[in-house]
Image (cartoon, rainbow, N blue to C red):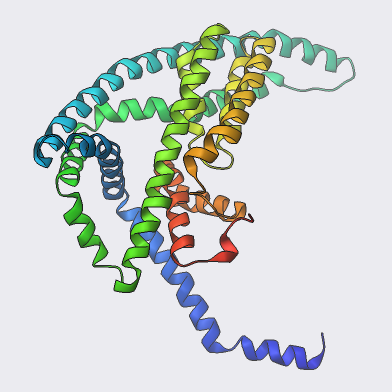
Length: 349
């Protein structure tokens, strides 16, 4: 490096620039800590907002015939009945299939013990002493724990639904008042936004944030339903549980679909190799149909973010709010990128 270039670099790295950088890092760290401290509040209000958003569509349709308050009350009661019914019926089925799956995998892993013993005897002939029983035991524990992470979110969600009954009541009450006074609340939020950005902020929220959630939920429902029907046709064991795993992971942009199919494939390997291959092929075909024909019509370019930024947002979201942070990190990032027109963070068209 030439001497003038080095001087220029040193001039740029002055104390003021370093102080600004350190203040930026400290502000980001403090902001993450504050979000983590209020994680429970954020989770409750986020779930309430999602429920209110889903119920807002039938409320708008019913408002044409009855007053707004009556429409909100009727839709809310019917919605809670439907959600409670699905939670009990589908939840109990998923829990039952999950227990059967864990038992099946444990049996499969125990059946590998004689094979490990035979490999140990074979290696001893070459004076190679390896204790595969310990490795097999650790591998078994890792598989079971990984399975818990893979299907545990659905099982844990059901358990949380019954254990945290107070949180469910809070979510229901908050979502009801969000439906009832949604316009007033939105006007209150807009007061925090500069006047010249209010119209753009409203459009960006509708297209990027709400549009993303609407599209992802439709795609999740499509993938879960189609894979469940295909699993029934192929006589796949635990069809509802595996279909829900594939559908939930599909909510994660970028890598979700691959992770879902990979987990289903690994689970089915313990049942039948040929069946696992069939399921992977069918899932790939369904995802190709979804990505090429359904996603472009539903999402309508609501997500236009550079893949590197997507992965960064997923990691930050997971660090701040866990599983919920993974799901909401991408739409929040899309809002920021579109609102401030950060072209460098957009994907190439």
